[in-house]
Length: 470
Image (cartoon, rainbow, N blue to C red; front, side):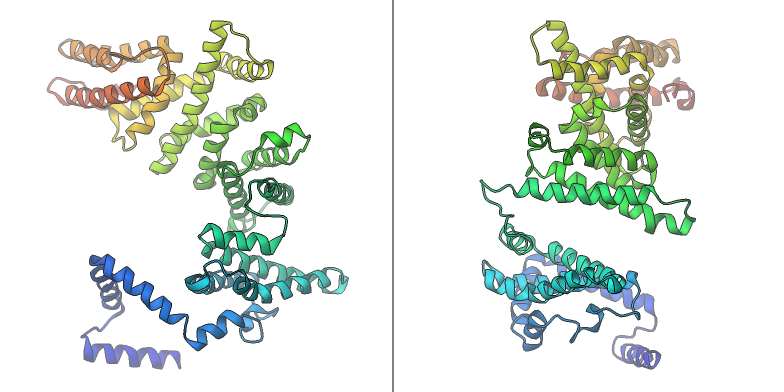
């Protein structure tokens, strides 16, 4: 039946539009989209107007008020649907909630009515969980409801509407100055991350086709959830330690366990999370066992040269935070000012680690210099930020790198390169203040251009033989 309909559609399209194959169909669609977006302002306005008319249709009103398994069988419990089929429920509720958002505004009663079918479903799950004979049904129903809530949360893109969802989930969670919503939410997220990490790490050997769906995908979601919590600015993490609450430490330890299990295939979620940790939680980073800290630094080193600019820039930001933290600690120790003992111990642990493993930062300096001089560096600003700190912390090694490059050239080019390196550090002071960083970034831009011209000039050595910094 479907094949017959498709043939009829293609026959009609051939008569009217002269389209005879699927490639032309796709090309026509894309051309239409492109032409519509050439006048984006009018197009967006017409779409908005269309949505407002759409939600007034009786069929749409009926969907918003009756999204139950009685009218939509895929929302029910059935052995005809696999667990993977339940993901369509996320897309369904995302679309449905976006329609709700058109005229929702601040109408809490309308939102409550929309959520009523889910309220009833959660009450049913509770009853099932108390019945040992219906555990499998409860599992499928709970997974489906989680898919539904995920779709709804995606579509609630305003503070007012998102607050309504929190109010529906728990009356204690309100985005109010006096409300502990951030802490309460993170505690639940921490429980979820810890429980899941324990389960996932207990899995035995998996086949290649099972690794992603059963392990990597879940770890990636945990990374993303933790990263959102750390960067969301709605949790005062110092409160956990102050009142002896271990939910924050437990979540971080779960991250470490999953990190040691797998990170290379999860770069899109791992590196942004690591950037958040190095930015605001260096005390945790410095408290790690040496082999774990080495593992993290090695992962940063490997990510610096990633083809994905987002990953590379994230690694540069993480490295900059670590280098800046270490530089400030050394500067404070040099001044011998009175500091809190805890802060001093955190910095001293990192300093001791670097003193025993000087090659770690030296290698990363080599990688960054290599990127600036020999490669098409697309994130030059990001690279410049940690590079200045590395140079100030390792001036001797920087001098060795400079001598290696200059001495590999013919005598006629050495003087030019020496001037390039002098210009790189011209006006740069021994600090990591923003003004000084900006000066170094400007110098580096000129340095990169001048060195490239010198190496391209007649008489320069082969570029491959100059790459002695990797």
